[in-house]
Amino acid sequence: MQDFLGNGLGPTNGLVVFPLETYVTDPIDLTLVTPGIEIIPAKPGHVPFLVGSTWIIEKASGTQTSPPTVQGGTNAAHNNVFTSNTSPANADVTGATPPSISAGVGAAIPSPAAVTANLPVIMDITAGATGTGTFAVVARLSVTIAWFAEG
Amino acid sequence: MNRQAINDFLGGGLGPIPLGSPAGGGLLAFPAESFISPLLDLTVPTLGIELVPARPGYFAVPSGNAIILVEQAAGTQTSPPTTRAGSDPGHTNSIPSASTQPTSGAINGLIAAGALPGFTIGPVSTANTAGVQQLANTPIILDIVTGAQGTGGYILKAKIEIRVFWVAVS
Image 1: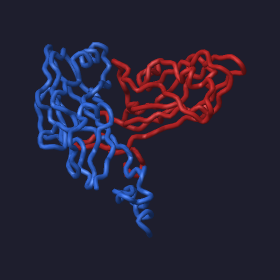
Image 2: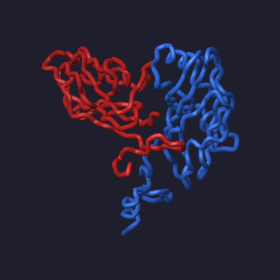
Image 3: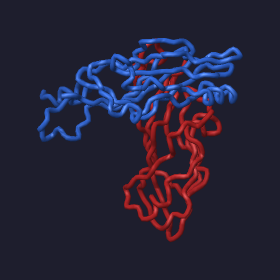
Image 4: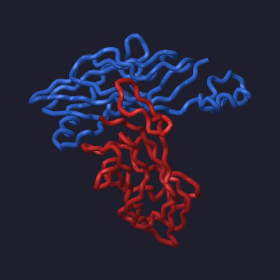
């Protein structure tokens, strides 16, 4: 039944295996301050660990002079999956020929940070990208995660 | 139903492709997978923990560092556990025997911050085992060679995760 529901096996006394999963957001206007973007849904009994991420630039024009500031997490502050950082880089946006890619939000462990099961990962754009010359940047964020059964 | 259709139906990928096959280059037979141990007491030497099962015709290549989910910790860690893992008889071709994670700094930081359960970096990277023979058809076995030590009611229980991709052998 668990397999049917796609919820995995949950805690066991043996091996637990899940395929790595990749989630991709809708296109996001990175020039706007936007809190509360759900990038990974909750999985009952599990916590996600961020393995890697990539920005997919869908639209870019003008010159980016400052990248957006983003953070994400399952906690109230939205920073226990990836801490506040600036991406995509100016050099990857200015002059880009979409669709193109750029390094994502990082995969380092926010340390020390508690994690909680049964919660989605929420991303906030706390500062929008800025630029000159009819500047625009629209991108999707791809995140790859591993699931840990908690308990 | 041809071979492609059968494999698609079974969800098992294409399997090894004979050399010289014009369609062979670049095919990916299995997705990367994440294997997680049961909850382990890292203070107790424990040998023979099966971490990754055998897959006939394939060997597993660890991808990056393992991740440790610390579920219970208290006191002060003064010495990390020593771990190793591999498909070879010495259990060292996936995680070399000198691995000493989670570090005392990482564990004591989680305890001090009350950040439990919490993630920390684990042993293994592909660079650590470069040039070492890999064996197909064999599980990766984890050994806790020496247990972690600490003071002040010290305990440490955690799960160890390893990500692998599968390489078919001819």
